Image (cartoon, rainbow, N blue to C red; front, side, top):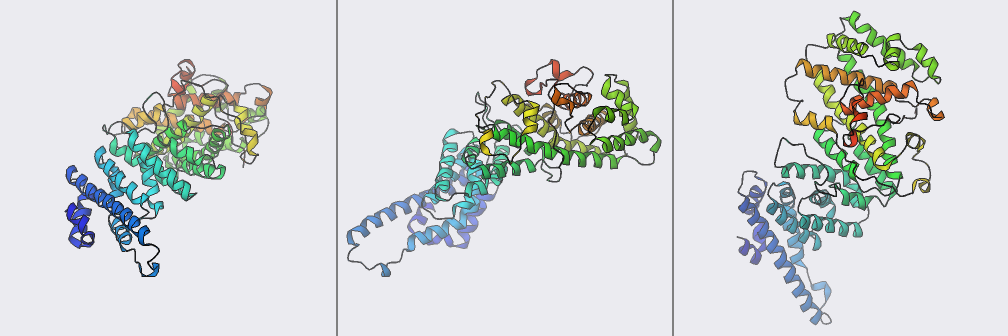
Length: 498
């Protein structure tokens, strides 16, 4: 068939041919050899067409002076363009095939189509970004080369489709992932540990406006309302952790927006969890809810001592001393209020992964670039670019390892049966989370070099949330588990009150 179509391209418009080709390309159960044959046929047709055009071009140059342009009709290029439009979608979808040779031929067809200018390039951009994450270097380079060509001719196209391309690259990685139980990661598993989408970022980072819009769009996927699946969030967090940042402004901008997202999504998350608790057991729940409302109303207070004095005694005790019994009582009192239906618990565990990943990402960038809390707090996106134009001093050996999210995905908690133990761990996470949200704002004394009680509470909550250990033994302080390591004076920076 392929040879017949080279001589008589118009046959490719026939309904039977369209149905045959498109069904072979789009049917998941169809044999790999047939898919490759169809792609090869298209590739050979385009190559022959290209040769034919070059020959016609040479012939035309010989007689150009005598001929009248108005009488010439360039029919052949119009035909190959129409043919490629018929099969384009199915060829692009072949990028998501598990077999690398299918992806290889699909990429060849798209490269030929783009080089001959047969289709509008914008529709291919997300697919090419996705192919730029392929494990085979030759295919990566070919896809990246096409993107560079498109970027030269049409500025802004890459940025316009960058987020769609990141999402598609996750689909490609899912297709390639041989072990379904292992979560899809967003960096290369070699000594470079570079982000899979690092080429995309390096193309966008030169333009400050495009770069910021791209980073904000990625961070918005972590918002609780975006309902992005957890593994995709892990994939994007991996990329954000390993992008080739060059100036201090880039990671500082990300941290600034993480803080804003945390303050909004975190409050929503706590609110929805509290609403799901059983209302009729008011006696057991009372201390917990009082504690919440009182500390919320005082969280804006300037003087720490006043804030401490106005908090209920049980919370003050938990902040000041390391006694764990109070926390145990709290876990028990919340456990008693849990609804019969465990769906809200699973929902909380699911949504909180996005926020935990942001906390981890911020901690990782802070460790990687060696930023102090005060530097992160003082950063303002509206300041002139020159202030933060200094190069980053990257620390070596800092790896992004979000243990809790990896455990969550490996244990398939979203679909597994909820045991008493899992319930307890989710409730503990909720309480740590609540404590962190209460102390999210920076205190006045911190600037004088003292570590305030609120900072301690915040650090303890973060240690507990990220390291998974109980605050009593400050697990993450002692074991330097890759990026889980957490210095005591650290913690997450405050969000400016907006």
